[in-house]
Image (cartoon, rainbow, N blue to C red; front, side, top):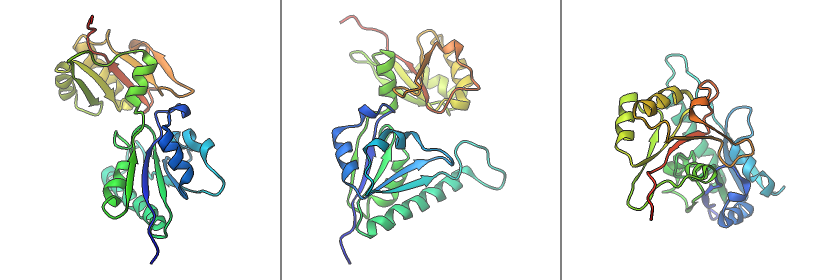
Length: 243
């Protein structure tokens, strides 16, 4: 049996192709197989970031989600469907590794910060030589384009999911010095209402697709809840400290 391939989880940044790290770029060019997660009928943001860096000799392995955010009819369970998908995706990656081919699974942002790669990592990292290369995550890209320092001096930062129930989100946000709220989309109305109730709506900053070519920064009160995309976030910076 020949040597097995190596698995790389490559963070490729939040959208701007120039925000990929030198190390991720080098490994991306060296591997035989480039795997990427993508929705049905889409190219995928992560693939768009790295497409210009690929060579004709490399094998592309699209890992196509069977579902994204749509509701499933009973008795189907989203959690089970997506878990089965990650099992199958990991088997596809493992087949290349077993054949001796190095595989880079690319991930928008950072692989271990809400990154799909982590589910492959959980399944394969104990069996294959593995390296993870961090990337600029969306909340840092968002802070940079908004010109908003996140935390000052001894403040703490909370990263919250918009999926949280109203009261739990409100409790956690009330306790935070500064916060980043991810996973808006269909949760936007609830999140904005919590901010209003806490009197934080005037301090909150909203950005869609930070660092991407179609980036959009608008006041929170003008956002159309029906069009708030998955790739959006709200930043509530810490109170300024005059150092």
